[in-house]
Length: 493
Ligand SMILES: Cc1cc2nc3c(=O)[nH]c(=O)nc-3n(C[C@H](O)[C@H](O)[C@H](O)COP(=O)(O)OP(=O)(O)OC[C@H]3O[C@@H](n4cnc5c(N)ncnc54)[C@H](O)[C@@H]3O)c2cc1C
Image (cartoon, rainbow, N blue to C red; front, top):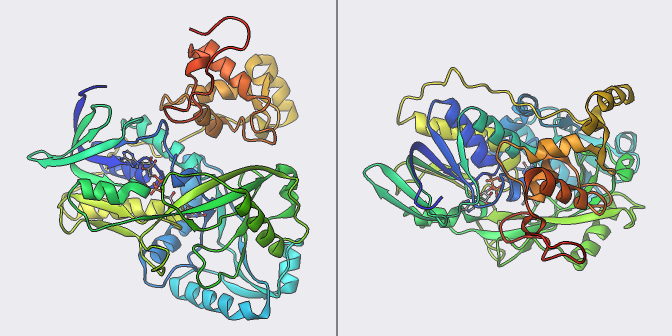
């Protein structure tokens, strides 16, 4: 990799959902586009660490980009997810007034949503709550029929695979450390020695987008990381919840309040909390927050126990205001007013997952205002993931097992993932072979045992099939090797 050079119309920094949606859109518009990502796979930042809710847009200040992009994003999301073969379900959502004092809050939200153009909002009573979400309780609720859930971690993967299938390039494990401007545009240098040149630079670096802007000569931004922790409940609890339920947001909440969300995979997510932190990539979780989340979640869903918790995780919001200042700051989606051809995408916190396809169109419009874009007629929009064994009938499984033995061998018992699916995940188009890459693509190691049974088998397959010695197998990014030697038997090379 050392010293590798390349020249493009567009260099995108950051392969989260926003960077990948933008890169794909610009490639569709006929521009040679490359993506640089510091992690070992795409979607490793906020894009795989959120609630997975396709918001309707009533939470966002009227007139803001957040509100406009969210409402527009929601409208087209089903088609977007279908085109990319990413699981999506329109569930609707309830924002629950737990007590009489919350009633003005949900009425204000409805008015804001109506102004923003969210279809179908209504205030409903306790009977409606009980009919639609029997385990929940409250005095009234705001009902949003257009809210949906989606597999947020599969979206960047699908976008990236589609981009690569159409000739796009992605450099993983490459941290941008410098940006300079010359006659040919921006020269972007990485810690690997990679140096790529682009006429346009798209700054989609999430939590580090303030630093990338500064590297490119625009020092006007500062981000303040604000962590949100979650707890994941076992699928056995799936019957408890049909749709996301949120409390009426209280003044001073750093987010939308601790909510309960069914994940598209059948788990229930509790969270997120909101805590300003010093290190933007401190994805730790704590017992104190676990207890706080549980207590708040029980207000919405009385009777919730802790026995079904299978995992914690956290995501970090790139806030543009610090804790003391607080208040609202809109998405920054614009060509820098101080550096020409630098497009800054800054402060893309919630609802960034919902807004990503619209942000991508907005970036194409920014570029299209300065130069003529010609659609690539050969671009194939659709993407397909391999078929899922768990989605097949018993009869189909029997036939498959007879014709393809790897499909009949279950490696992950909790999630019913076959050896064939693990092998397909290992052979992914981005060439990423960390355990996390295989986990997100196949769902192995995501079930109740959290890899206790299947992780050693996946490790063995990586060794046998990919020839990666056990000592070099990584959980995630470089430096996360899992094994330091053998307890018995032969040493690894
Ligand atoms: C707790 C939480 C809950 C949320 N819930 C929702 C929700 O339910 N619905 C919704 O619509 N939105 C939600 N969001 C918001 C949504 O997740 C984000 O807006 C979205 O994922 C942002 O995508 P991104 O691509 O901008 O950022 P990221 O996914 O963070 O991607 C940025 C990428 O840039 C890379 N990068 C950074 N610096 C460099 C560098 N120097 N060189 C190379 N690469 C670099 C990073 O590694 C990362 O992969 C939530 C966010 C959080 C934190």
